[in-house]
Image (cartoon, rainbow, N blue to C red; front, side, top):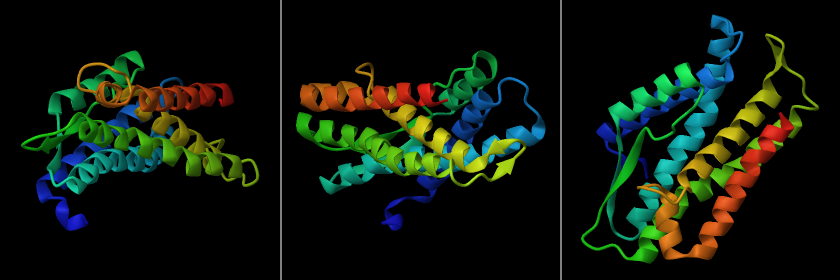
Length: 206
């Protein structure tokens, strides 16, 4: 499976992964940050955002390839800079560091919808293990710089994956939600409802 990921694509995924991890780290340490705290949250973000972002894009890629299409992730340098700048200056993450490009002579609405839904569905499934890690943190209290690392890892993983799913399910522009809605409104309502429901719940838990 890994042989289907080109060297260029691996490089683009790596650059986008690091950039968006930095952006999320800036959000979480926006107030009262120290270099040590930033590095702690960067490490956590690399794990949580890394898993959520990379598996989201690979889900698009391999679902498209299942239909016999060629698909490849391509980073967007401008959007990478915008993501980090917005996080630093406004405390907002605009999580669009690139996209999985699909090369297909013909693409039905159903195929396009299923390929698009694969990414957010992956993020929603990832919410399950991160929720378990969050609850594990209540029993296992490992602290660094005053933070329960297990609980923080679970919370950020849960929140980041819900955030990625919710953002991508917006039915606008080139986002996944617009293509899912065009294919199946019921699936769209279920996915966007679950995404925003989990995301709002994470703010309540905090």
